[in-house]
Image (cartoon, rainbow, N blue to C red; front, side, top):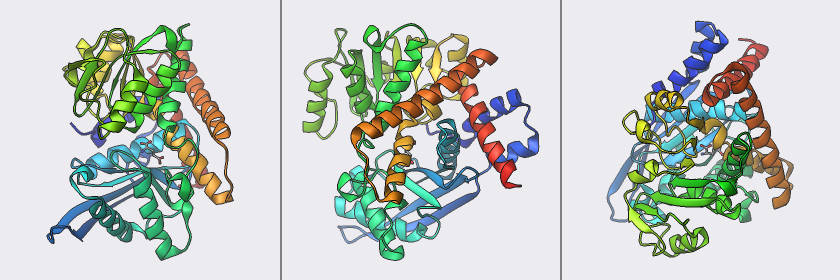
Length: 411
Ligand code: GLU
């Protein structure tokens, strides 16, 4: 099930209620500022015409240029894109980087297309949206099924139209104005947040067991960094299925296996094959959903056995499920905090692009750690003081920041 805008707004309204926010302000902050929908028609290798729909939803720019990823996925539609754009507004505010929120994408599966076709689709999409993006206007980045190569094509197409503009997208290849650390930043940021959450319970990653759903950019990098801190990962899954090893999966070996087998975990010899859905229900301390949205529902929330959930994906938990998890006192670290390391490092990349200056990996990662720890501390302290969930606390902090910027700019 795809994330819906209404689901995001359920969380928004819960926080708005805690804040006593007037209805009119709620409406201004909830609605997207601009919704762009374009036709992307290209000639496919077969000679046939491929016709796709592209989106860019610009949700809010009160705190700075619109910012957020591009998702290439058949489930992409306007409502879904608006939900994800709204989450970006709150996410950039939670980590306090000077951006608003946006999201975009195209309703197709790039895995079913040749590289040349994906390039033509990307360039055509860029031609269709180039007037509404730009280094000080709206800065796309990778998301599900998009990567550094796709960002390079967008930068190239945009620069053809507007002159040299590396700051128009983030998540670019290192050889083309990308930043050290950006590729791993979401996974590393999530690991920092996990460390902080466990520290508040007097524990460390090394003392806990984990299950990770999803083994793409986020899931595989979380696995790498959790394993490097001696956390025991008992189960992982991706779209090809799940794996379980109660002694702990050998993550460096699994990463090597995935690299050799088109990025998938299927067929890894060092674990028992289980279903992808089962991974969510394994008896581990910490569950990390790091694939698509809407996977924790009211149907499976009662069966979750983890005591802590760290949301690597955007919107993995439906509002119904969130209620159940809260009632069961399972600690949920919400997406807009947990996975904000990616966009935080995107910010560092953009700063480097603007200054035409390059930071070393140590500098990037130590700044990332500082931003994630600071955001976590603010949210945790508020949640504790007000006796609210971490998600509601994150929304309260974010809405407060966006609301203040809006009022200061003058309605
Ligand atoms: N797609 C990522 C996210 O959902 C990163 C966005 C960005 O770097 O702008 O946070």
